[in-house]
Image 1 (cartoon, rainbow, N blue to C red):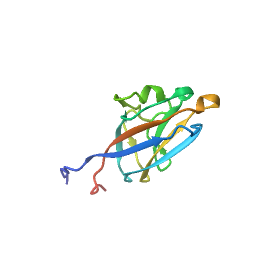
Image 2: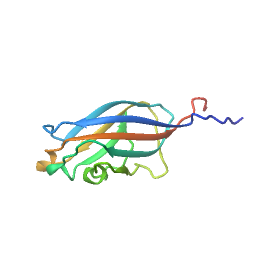
Image 3: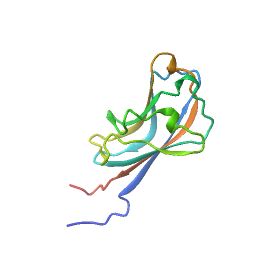
Length: 137
């Protein structure tokens, strides 16, 4: 038997603020946005609505996670994703979507090395689009 659930398409929203004194070599920011187990992530958008300063961290990567599951490719370069007042779509870890085996909060990881790991400030909105039907088997 099939059902038509009007709440299948959902979006988890998170705001991430990074102060300038933080080193982004291994920075993980946990958000309050939750994605349930059994969901299929279909897209991620990033919007920098506040001031963005990348300084030497322009080649840092940005990768959203749910629990320990990477949602996006680790090739999403921050300077390409965090452009003031421009909506950017991040490349998913799998082009067809990402299945969430263990639900959890969205974490946003920033990564860089050496001197390229300092001088970043930003206020970013992250939108994680996913499909979820609580009645699935």
